[in-house]
Amino acid sequence: MLTLSSLLKTARAWGYTCGDFRFADLTLPREGVKTEPRSFTDDEVRKIISNASEPLSTIVAVTGVLGLRIGETLALRVWDVDFAKHVNRIRQSVDAATRIPGAVKSKASSADLPMSKELEARLCANLQRHDGESNLLFVNRRGKPFSANKLREKQLHPLLVRLGIPRGGFHSMRHGAASSFSRTARLRPLYGDNFATLMRGSLSEFTPMSSVMSSAALFRIARQDW
Image 1: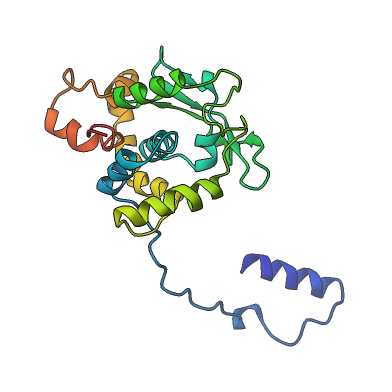
Image 2 (image 1 turned 135 degrees about the vertical axis):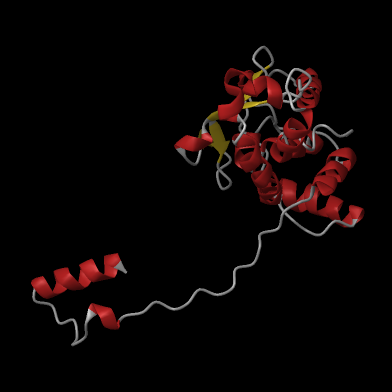
């Protein structure tokens, strides 16, 4: 409304015909009822990870556990997985149309995300299968970045049908992780430099255990058997 008010004011100042009405007479239509976006449950994500073939299984694990955009997962480079510091460095994203890695969507998307021990083990196994010819962690048979659309249509959706899971895309995994991120983020000021250790699952040194266990939901999927 402020933009429209500014347009009307400028148009009148420049001598344009704007009609005989006041800004107070304008109203915006009411928004319709918003539908909740599809979010995979923890059990659904575990079933997908357990039944998917590689590399889709690891792609889903990284996307679902860390709450990444699929383009960010597909753009992970070998050196973005830092086993010494136990983090994944999110620095780029594969464009869905061109399949060319580029900048992430926003400044906030560039981050170092802690890895659970289970996710570390899975990524380590994936690197052992890596041909070493590409700097990307996930590539197709031609050594090129995967197409997120083809992965969804040719691999993910048929798998969902076979498992009896309602249809959803890779972004549904991001939605499913969002609430866990928001809850877990509140722990950072409390634990400071120990936050990354906490997120990796080394909970024994923290008290009270019940409080930590209920809040450390970021790796809720990774704690279960894949």
